[in-house]
Length: 89
Image 1 (cartoon, helix red, strand yellow):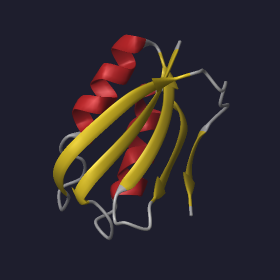
Image 2: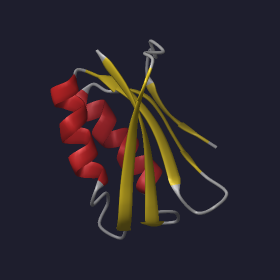
Image 3: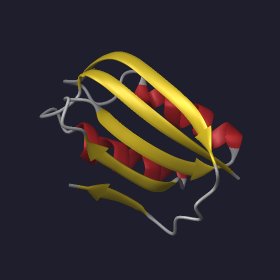
């Protein structure tokens, strides 16, 4: 089990990025959360086996149809043992 923090920049708010992220996370069995940041970016914390997280990060690079992702930054962090994946306001 791994924990990563993901920061996605570009046109990623107002394009269903959070809802699509939750859908993808649920599909892959990833736990954690996604939220919009005041600067227009999207912040994600995700926990799953490394291989699953790699697939998820790959998806984050394009996101939903209307998103225009410029950059995806990931950093490892201690596991928090999330029990679900949620969209936070």
